[in-house]
Length: 126
Image 1 (tube, rainbow, N blue to C red):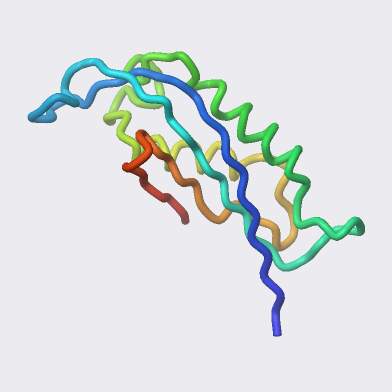
Image 2 (cartoon, rainbow, N blue to C red; image 1 turned 90 degrees about the horizontal axis):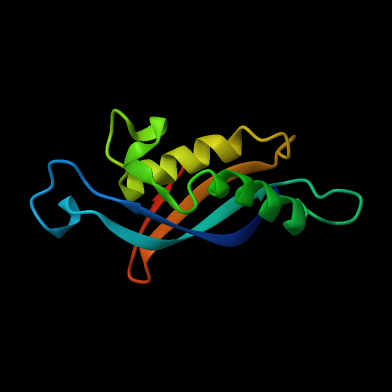
């Protein structure tokens, strides 16, 4: 039997955007208090009995989110060719965080969940 551990950390940032081509309110400039959950999975614990240190994971997630914090997302190069939707934002955060050197062995980023409001979220995983 394989042991599988899953841990989660949550962070947040504030940013504005609009959705080009959308027929509705979201076509206008507006902002969100975005909440982001990073979910990590793995099979092996370290010598301390941890999959990954929460403090390290939180710090890496914060580094990624700081690039979006208090920004107008449509102006970022990342979203020059596509709308800064919650879906595209989740994928971008996933790809940036997954590239971090904090992951090794069986410990991998499993998913990123982005809430643009308390009642609306998207989950991205590869």
